[in-house]
Amino acid sequence: MDLLSSLLNNELNMKDKKENGGGRDRKRQQENDRKLENDWKRQEDNDQGATFGFPIVDTSAILGEEVKMKNIPPSVLPNFYGMSTEDLDAFMFEFDILCRTYGYTDDIHKLRLFPATLKAVSLKWFMGLGEQTIAFWDDMKSVFLKKYQPYCRTIDSKEDVFRMTQ
Image 1 (tube, rainbow, N blue to C red):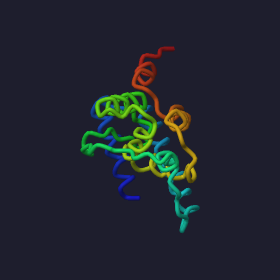
Image 2 (image 1 turned 180 degrees about the horizontal axis):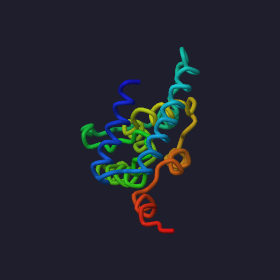
Image 3 (image 1 turned 120 degrees about the vertical axis):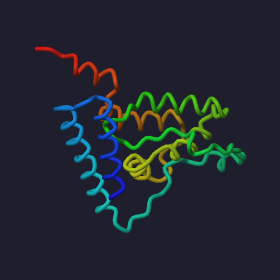
Image 4 (image 1 turned 30 degrees about the vertical axis):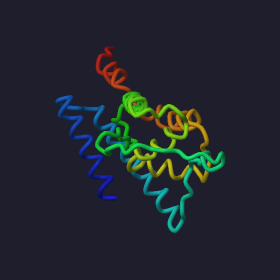
């Protein structure tokens, strides 16, 4: 849990440096992040002793195909922590570019690579989806966006908030 708190504080400090202040928006983000952390703790308490099955269906085993994956340096992978300050659209764009760069255009490659980009709360959410519940990339993308799109605001919407006048 110390790692998550450290990540949350680090993310907020970086955001403060960018915005030179923060004000009410920072307080709102801190509150949202605290709620997310509390939800995570509550889920962790409920899951004591539980084991997670991997959510991705291995269609290559079903079809008897061998899927070759290239070695991608971890530093190249975009990371998503599931925090309200993250830009979900930028993350998905970076993931798509990475997949195209390495020739991962089919579902099985994207599905195998995607979990490696998730960290902290988002990885915990992913592993809680249930065993073998996702078989296609479009399903994974849809479930992921449904979960995090309302929570993560884009940079444009943040800037719009600052431009509002009464």
